[in-house]
Image (tube, rainbow, N blue to C red; front, side, top):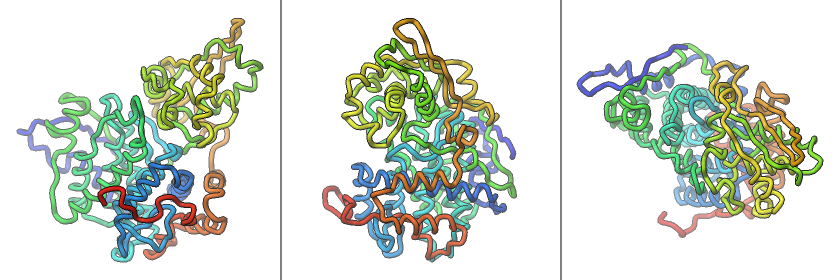
Length: 506
């Protein structure tokens, strides 16, 4: 690994292209290192994980609407859309749009948290869609697909470790879109210069505000990474046609660092693998056992544990969650969002309220991606009462552990103090979720398969489940014409929005 200083340069200083961050990110697309076996296995886990949560969300309105848009763009040699028959193909950018929305809708796939937030599994839908559309023409294989996904993870995780977007109220897709562009460039074996132009375009068009995750959170939270994938595909296509993009996109005096991030005096250190080094950053990502914001995963598990010591929930006076800066200010009371305490709030908002999440997990001792967010569940009087007794505070120790570079120290949980009316307390803490690689019950392949089978049960046929799991676990053996098999089909009669309609413009 090699570290690079990234800062702002005035236009009168001609920063050599080779010293620009976008150039170095694009260079990962030309690495042809050996695929690390552990990393390959984690790619398979991530494909299984994405498919699981996408199919579980397949009938939800945002996913159905994204699919209905994709169905307006059929293509003889195109990409597959989750839920639809494999033989039906659509334009890659629209398949990526539909599949990316499906993957993101339940907020239940993989995560990586450091200086900023990310869901690196969002890289997979656009890369897979391009692989399916271009596979036969380019002679692509499952090995090419795996290599592309690993490169995309490498870019996004490196940026998330180094450059904080949240502090400047920018949404995390600004790190996702260039990662997707590098992944697609890797897949297609494009020249370094072409990928550079695609990365610059991807960065330029993907900076958006975090209002999508603030206040009245809407379905755009699920669409945002799919939008990034769509932009990345267009950026690569444009670059392949010889077009150029704004540069230097990070370091320019009127560009993103100077005017959207830390400003003209900023200095970031970005660490990337050198040529020949295997891309292993995917191993640092972690999935979700529970359908909720990742910073709630350990606290949900802690709620399950603490509830065993509570005899009377009505006797609780107050619950204080001592946690990191990010947890307090994003999903805690530090956000100052009244919607996070509103029983009529959207599912997306409840998913970003640790007060609601902890109350329900404490009462139920279980978490369900549908039932735990239902209007009936959220409006239950005893739940509302308990929910409003919960507050968060930032604890510097937990903030330090959140940002720790040592995986053994890094933590996303907190310490919970439950105070009762008689003055007695129960105090406990949990650093990482049970499913985390350093957790009490770290997930391996069987757990991912169980998650897939659980979330898709009653939605797809057992033989379809078996077919997909066999195909995906042999991903590196797939040839070009097999890549469309990396789709999961739902019986059409049970799938809403399964034909083209005329409700919109398309």
